[in-house]
Image (cartoon, rainbow, N blue to C red; front, side, top):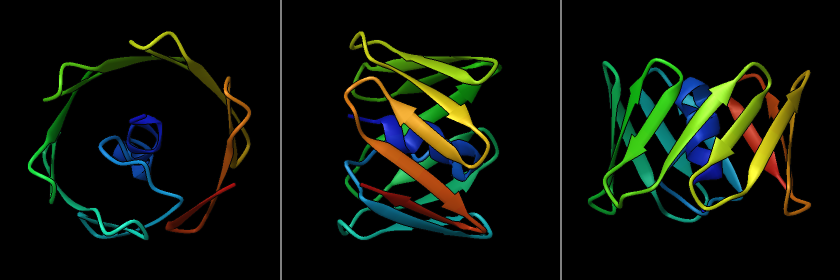
Length: 107
């Protein structure tokens, strides 16, 4: 699920990976599952060969998935969703992620 990546295009569009923890330094994103990315403008290029592009409230991924952010809610093309409250994002599958500074911690 690209939920973390959608979170990470702000860190928060971390969209390409199934990561548990990610850190953003400048335009670089490094995740503990071995996936890393580089943001260039509205695009994020991932080390696994995929990419993500943010256009307005939409994020389009090269694997055909997408998401749309509406206020604190994000709706994913696989039918799942998430809601961000403060620094924590809660996913419809029960997972949650918390942003602390430039790092994202998920359970």
